[in-house]
Length: 90
Image 1 (cartoon, rainbow, N blue to C red):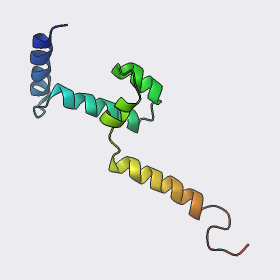
Image 2 (image 1 turned 90 degrees about the vertical axis):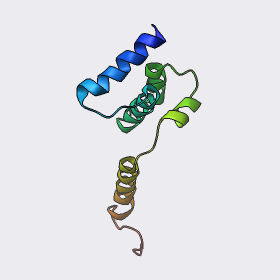
Image 3 (image 1 turned 120 degrees about the vertical axis):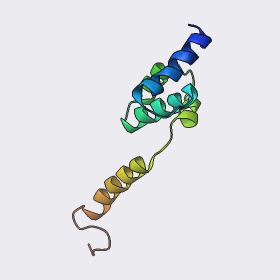
Image 4 (image 1 turned 180 degrees about the horizontal axis):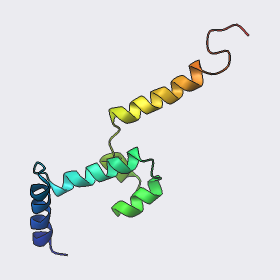
């Protein structure tokens, strides 16, 4: 692997695809976040990304609004759709 070659090949990819220019490092954040969205187990993410410590997940994976909304819906379903719901007398 050559950093010079990797850099130039990376810079050509977005151009060919009609996308905006971006840093290869930013693509690593995007890849890690996509793996989080897909629910890939952390150990598998670590193997894919070449990480040796779980602290890297906190650095590279970003919780998106979509993830927050999904969790809120799941919690809402547990609280409000449960038989009896909250606030009902037992």
